[in-house]
Length: 197
Image 1 (spheres, rainbow, N blue to C red):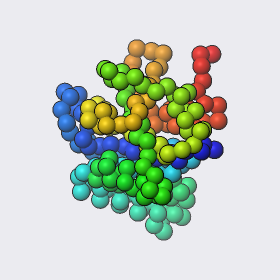
Image 2: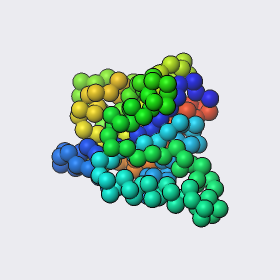
Image 3: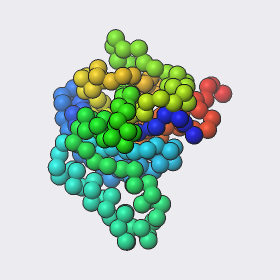
Image 4: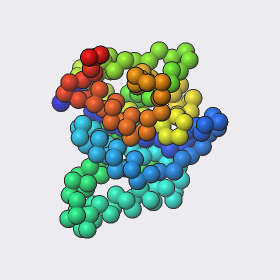
């Protein structure tokens, strides 16, 4: 069990679109459910869906309420357990404040992710971050972006940038729920980061 508390944030806005413009993306049911399941599986303490759009916030609340209500609880109790970690918030600042509130005032170290290298920023490796988790200390907030990634000020305002996931093919465009699962397994899984076989 890791000593540092782990939280996950999935940012829907502001993020970039394929033209590099600032946008807010739509929340998808798959990301709500699947990332909550991954966070719960790996012992994360919370999963924040970040969107400034009131209609999208209400959609998330309805999804969670469905599975926490009497029908969902009886139909699939495991889904209720997983969605118990999910919460919708307006902004990343609200997420940081919520984590600090849960952790007795301890502000989290913000760790952002990117599918690409970021110019001028030396990323932390999976093995180094895994060691920091094992050493305990401040909670960690792992931040993932939807669309075409986090905006520059989110990356620039973070404490750490995690190295990108690299596959063995030339293709590099994972779904965000896949990326979250891979990152959580590399950081919190029993075997940790695996080298070449």
